Image: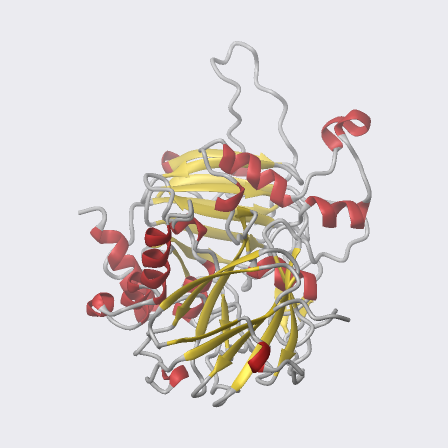
Length: 267
Length: 221
């Protein structure tokens, strides 16, 4: 597959709405009748959606070195949320790839990684905050640069979760898709620059109704001296929930139990 | 400051001069306020006990300890002498000024009834857990803190290495009887503790044990 990253022209004004159907450009293998929506998220931007149980989100790096930070909350009970330590220790992992399950603090699978061409997504590196952004890149405000202004992942996600009544104390450790932060023998972080090539793909299946908020701001450990956030393609589609022979369910017994616990909420 | 594997540092402080001296039995919660400039010592009395701690800014409880900000600020995962524990607002909360254990974990989180069903077996959910301890302490204290504030914590005296290929491992403890860690408060602190009751994990030899907490007033320099 050779992805095409051109953003098509706006549709004619006679169309009832201007929602673009762009998924064919970066996810042409998806079954058209099941695609719910698709978007191209510019670098440095943020948005949020409620993903129903049994839906999937295809994420595609449209440029090398993309980063997509995501936080996840149970849509109906937002006190239940993705829990980084619980997910890592249950699966004895410090990175995510196909098979892994993103677990809530209530022992349930919020989402499962069902496809991955990258092999390592970062759960440790957290978000670029305003202080680190300004120290690293200087100021680029709306007043001088309009929509090319700089905004870090932390502020982007605070805006998104704020739309649902969640406050700064509710901002959790994110998953940084497309980024890799290894840990050396001394415990030090080792960031892998340009880890994900253009066209790299990872897909989540939602096992609960899940509020997600995303930011495409740079990873806080990215050593690139210029602020150069990369765009990401998103396509949401309907797959149905995990069946009895599901790959994630059989990946580890802990994953099977977390998926079982999620299933119990949907009897 | 860069994290290195182990930085052993003994403390000159005299327990006879401490203004707080509290032994916490295994499996119990504990809430304690202490002030900027005061020094807290946590003692692993019998060895390899997990002491699960979350710190809050006592002046603004919405500001809490942040495992990710702490790791990001020091560029690594292990806590030991010299590590600065950072808040969710990116501010220093406490500095580790002495440590005879040499390594503490902030990736492993606190055990919960629900996570026990995932990690061990579904029927483990009625066993006691750290997050139940946190909740009962917060419910009785009525401090406007709730489950949303139960963020990733510090596991003092626990050794949770990450391998080069990204696996999380639960290694034999580096702690032992009487080893301690000492932290100087950089702001007024509310500390929430669960002295871990986990009986399913070999990290504590399946034998939770007491921990001791001492606080000294700011030292004249």
